[in-house]
Length: 409
Image (cartoon, rainbow, N blue to C red):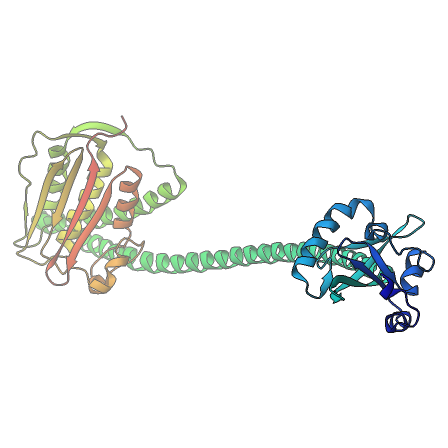
């Protein structure tokens, strides 16, 4: 220890010239030397610390950990910063503590090992770090508040944008429906103008001509024109019935009535009515094996459906052609097919065939409103049935109706 006490020793000269505190300890952690800066830093007089344990400068709660760290350091004997990654504190003579930073340097003199520690008071730095930390915390709080406010503003804006989009979509939908309604009105007026004008013209002509045949021997000619008038009136009545059906379907005022009836009854009535419309050489093949089939369904709707399909088959087929009606049972479903050898439906237009007022390009010269199939489809869907078709232009079409055999009685 005497080697560190000589006033003429170079050690004393060098350490007293350094502003940082220096403490030297031996292997037993006994203080063997200090400089004036360290004495002042910890509140001791010159040489007052020499011979005391290093723990004198360390708060008691850190003694145990410091002892193990010191032993580990002595075994490694390399320069390093003491307490790296941990907060270090020094204990002053008056019992107060303060944060420090310590750099350790092991060395050996005359065969003995020592450790020199360079001690720096970092109270100001810690205060600044704390202040910075508080400022950062405050800043983070402000950022969080402003971020929250911004997110709330964004959310409000998104809701407002969504409301505007919904309003815009409603306006677009209203405009679309308005255009659609306008188109339907235009088609309706065109259809009424054409479909009503022709029969009414025929009725007027036949009535005029019938009035000219006043003699008894002209009765046959009178009856011919009277029959023409009756057919035209019936045609107009059917058109009006179709329009009334559309109104009832759209307003939900259709009351379906289920009953048990043989399928043959409906098919007989449909074919009987269709026979008066057959062209020269046209025939309808009656379905086989239907006499024992009894179903529960709305009889009028089924008759309306088959009448529409059979009449279309007649109307869109030429003379000397055959119309086949087939009926089969599959489980709890009844399948009715109407096949013709007519003009068929162009492939590009088949997807529109059930649209209201639609008429295929190759059928525009034939009388028709383009609403019959639409009405049939709506009725069948309401009754858990379906209608589909296959068609090839200039070869014919087959319409297939599937209905449940047991309805809601």
